[in-house]
Length: 84
Image 1 (cartoon, rainbow, N blue to C red):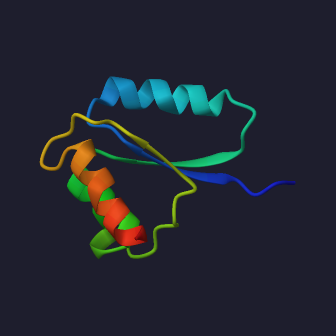
Image 2 (cartoon, rainbow, N blue to C red):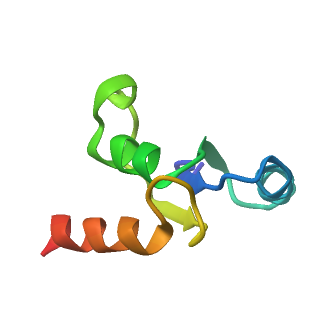
């Protein structure tokens, strides 16, 4: 059996997060879904800092561009800095 895909969903709207969760539960892809509500939390998850010290490295990030505290474009810029 294939390894489950670790997915990080960055979404501040609970309804949208529920829709994504439901869609992924009904998909044929085995996955572990992790949800954070803003860009600051997303970066903490990705960097495995604070309460996310034991978080897995996500295989896929689903990122809302309009987020509080740190928007999706800023998150993308930070991720790009980390990999270049």
